Image (tube, rainbow, N blue to C red; front, side, top):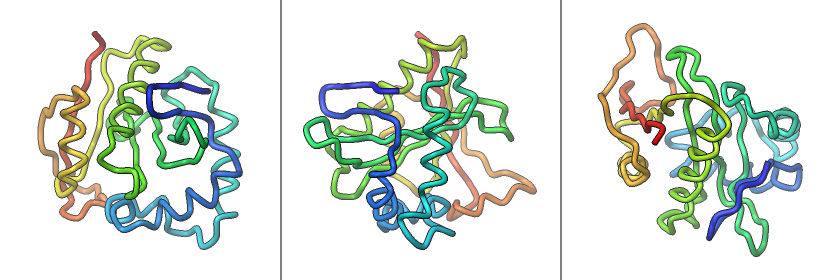
Length: 179
């Protein structure tokens, strides 16, 4: 799969991305809210299996099947972040997720990627809306969600479902509806 915007490319992950994936997942701003991308992977080669899995699913238009893509710069093809889509099983809803390297944050790249992937999801499916679930403490990501047209519906604190990656066990629940 490949989606090109003005400033980024969303493309299938490749083994060449393993080193960048490894380093971005360990950046403090990424690790703070998404430690599961780094934990249990002590070396860049530990991402090969994950990349292989996502490559097999990358062209599938069933958006309920979880997959992630590289967000890359168009002129160098360097991976600068990741974006994905899939079924959030506990909610039975389709969720987008993303992270961006600290070096490339606040340049509009993530916003472009979110908008492009959401548009693709609506084109290839009949889903009525997409969701984002964002740690309440992640102020920049919450602001970004609203800039991308996602509407904040509520703050949620799951009962009996410890969100190990959430600093305060609460998250904001957003939706973006088909236009």
